[in-house]
Length: 72
Image 1: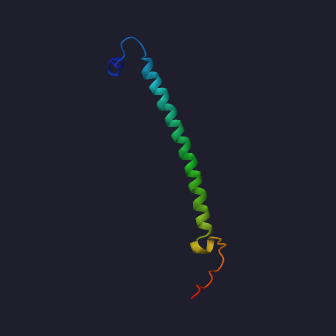
Image 2: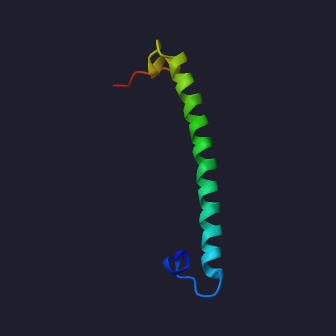
């Protein structure tokens, strides 16, 4: 019954096996990417919590010289 549902006639289809391996690899890649993004998000959340009392402009170190008045 299971073979009929999956379309098997005389064994495993090499194309189906290759596609399954490709999809399994893709799932592993996506899971790795998810772990990386979650850790990056955790680091950003921790940094945001540390600077919660500061304004965004206070946390940016600007090294811009003062503008000179325009000549008239």
